[in-house]
Length: 254
Figure (tube, rainbow, N blue to C red):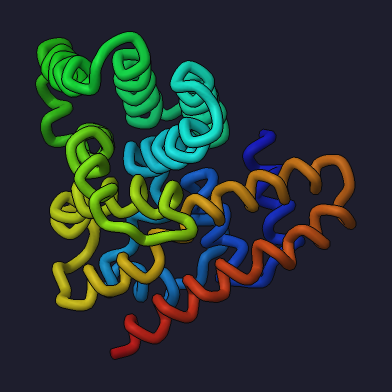
């Protein structure tokens, strides 16, 4: 019921297809998304952004961890990361695939806190294999595949990206790029056709996904208390959503 209320808040705050895109990114629901725009998501290989998945879960954890560990202790960053995972799992409706992703991500963050990064990597594969022993059919589950690959990207690839100095926003860019690269083969395999434009479009839109998730959560929270306040904040959310829609529409019409 509350998810429907939040979707309604986004629909009253933003025009289409921005409202349904925001609802998809935050809550994993399509809403009243126009068919033409949905087809453009498929054509550009970006349909995964509106599916609550392990990718979204680990983006939340990765960005929060990266931001907070710069200014606070590793313990504080870990707590914030796990809390962020829990909040997103709740927002996304607690589906089985998202809960599994949340558990895997939380265990990995805990291992990183209590031990060395190598132990976090080891626990990732122990958790993955353990889940397969319980349910071998998970090997074909796209949510599980995205969870494992996104977590692996944060553990293996992100540290290497720190060698590339990008200046302002590094804590935001590194985990997003790491998870995006690690999940790219799975995304291209499962979501729509494999088009040459997919890597380009994903590179242009994925860095702003965490920002959209955060702003959309603020909008639905504020809108639950005062629709007027939610609409005011919604104009801020409109900007990154407008950019994402225009990129997808332009490339999708090629």
